[in-house]
Amino acid sequence: MSSARSATTRQTTPVQPEFAPIRVEPAYRKVAAALLERITARTINAGERLPAETELARQFGVHRGTVREALRELETNGVLKRERGSKLMMVTRPARVDVAAGVSRALALHDVSYHDIWEALTALEPPIAAAAARQRKPKDLARIETIVAAGVTVEQTADFFRAVGEATHNGVFMLAHEPLVQMLIPSLGALIDKVPQAATRIEAAQKRISTAIRARDGDQAQEWMAKHIRDFRRGFEVAGIALEQPVETG
Image 1 (cartoon, one colour):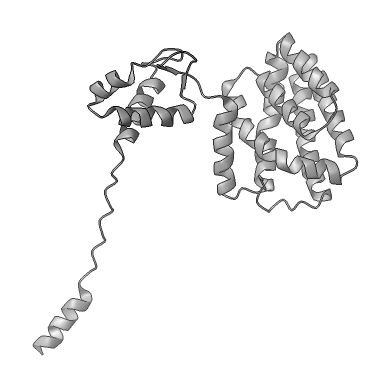
Image 2 (tube, rainbow, N blue to C red; image 1 turned 90 degrees about the horizontal axis):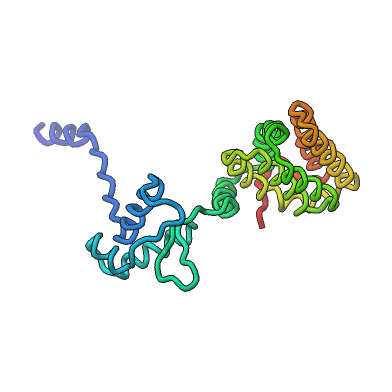
């Protein structure tokens, strides 16, 4: 009887969840995080130089090699750079293309599909074109028209999207659409090669958008960019690129 009761007790005793392992970060990561916090808080501004490695090691209370690893990591991420002839690291802004490349890799690892990219472009590019028409400067217009006149290629098409984005003079727009443009590039070759009318239609759309931007007509720029993005979807279907398949970035 007693053994039966103890068996029942063992069966009904709830299983306690295990504790999660405590994360122990290397010292250089903590140093890098502390430096990055100062940089993003603008306590240390772009163009300013950091103290020497020995001084940073003294302030953090770590070995110089630890500081060197931290600086190397931030340099790889585009937050720091060493000017020629100087031993000191200087704070800099990561290039948009480099930031976007990291986002593009993350999107690829999450298996985003061509439909995902097309849907995101549909949401972003028409308002970007409208903003470009309102905000563009003469040099922006000259760049856009030079790109259009160069003739349709994979890189030219990507450059057109970038030039329109930069004509907005809105840093958020420029950063937001660059990863999508980078992911679109691998599929553009197949689209242009497999769909005979693709280059002609892309060129016609670019000219319409460029004309609207020249006229500062935001409504027309937005409308033609929306048509342009819809055309990409049709082109993918004609080229036999399944919209639901993950984007091939190689």
